[in-house]
Image 1: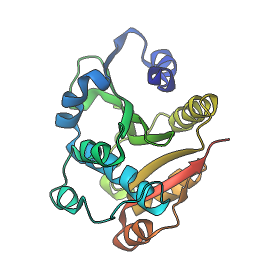
Image 2: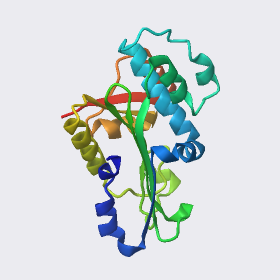
Image 3: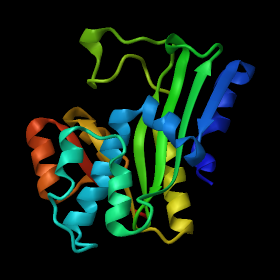
Image 4: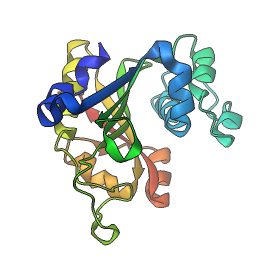
Length: 214
């Protein structure tokens, strides 16, 4: 189960009974799409990029261009029709807050998907300490607003354990901005060797990365 990947025990040790958690699985896919339309489109884009660049299927790389042009959050559905099976086999979105669920109290946001051709994708991740905001001038990453919780390594290790137990070969993600590439490299990910990755690096955003399962 994907739930076992999320480091909830460490969060509960940190925040105790004040921790509020919400989980949304594949049965809640419409909710996930509504909450994370760009993340869902990026997830579909990553799946399609690997289908094309690894030549898993005999497809026209441009046949889904209209879905890309409109940033379709249901791109995965179109991919499923092309390949004849579910592009997203399982998915989980988890949010956690210190106390009442509101933006200022958010401590974790994670989206993980078990996808086509036996790969595990990290679609979204944020850990933040609401008590430790970072001044804009001191921020290292574009999306950073608070100090983290030191749990990214645990999350990725748990992903690796899940994938290894199922015989999967790769973990994947898309770095939203170029400044995140060194962070993910420290956790074993490398930029993919394909045109989409080179375009992403040049643009400074949407950079596909992969890590071989240990």
